Length: 113
Length: 114
Image (cartoon, rainbow over all chains, first blue to last red; front, side, top):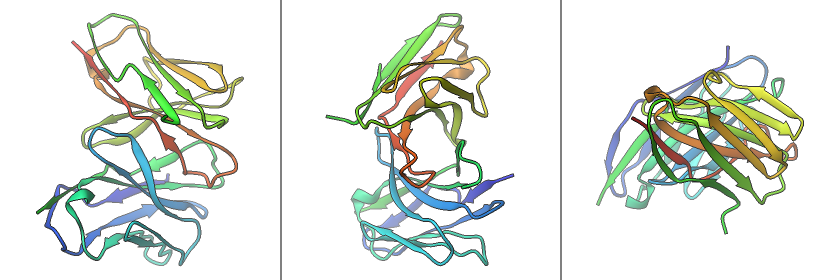
């Protein structure tokens, strides 16, 4: 079945460091891929998305590229800020199954000033 | 005003009690979802509804029921709460016009069952 695996956290970085959060997936068909972010005390919100292979999603300085050959969708940011501290979820949806999306377990990110 | 609201935001209840969590949305979306979040487990789908007359079980529906009272309202009930239902519950919405997987979440309800 479809699944998403993302690196376990917590991840702790200093401000202005480079960030990578790994995400790999297993899916039938051609899924769309997403990164959601959950700030403390809030619900999830969509950070970025990619709907086909080689697409790059980007938002707020974050980027992720849909790599079909490695079944990956790693999240990157060149210079993190304290305000980026949150939990990040990788997710996929299969266009052939419109009933649900599959979330990874989440990666907690702490940015130190 | 928030597009997806949940009430209550926090609730403490006792084992065996019936409890209802409510979700309302002003986005005009047809699709609504209930998830629970547990530490280290991510989000798991409880129930979802694609319109008022369409209700579907998710991966962890046992012990839960739902009611879609209107397009804008989707309630989750625990008929007889038990401690392992202690979790953070989220409502979400989407619409066929969006890519599948693009959902809008409420702020969550933190439920504690003693």
